[in-house]
Amino acid sequence: MSSYSSDSKPPAKKRGRPKKVKDPPSTPEPEGEPEPTPAPAKSGKMTDKQKADLKKHMEKHKGKMGPSEMKSHRMKMMVRMRKGMSVAQAHKDINK
Image 1: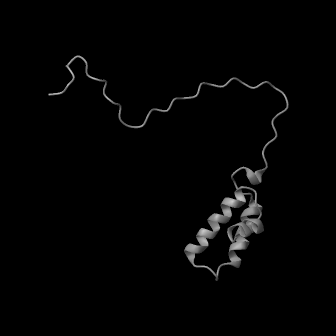
Image 2: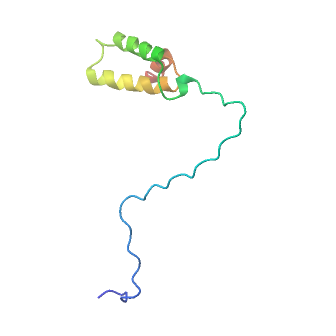
Image 3: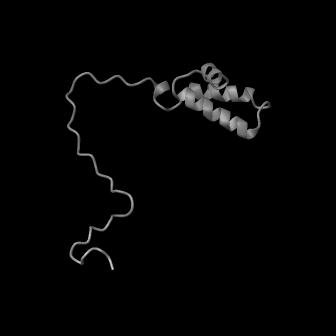
């Protein structure tokens, strides 16, 4: 027998993920000078030049590394290049 009487049971616990609450619509900002856009190198996406530079860099290392090592090196390079580093800076940072 439980220690709770039939009238004073605690509320049942909810299961599952909590539901997402939608943000209220924001008020429009006053007209004025538009905010400057961030530099493309630091926006989280790589530019076409960065992609070409990385591809050229990886071609240099093709015979020296195995397939899994190449993929690992490429991913490490991409992370650093998205932060704004050049190929040389990123490679130097990895091989410290």
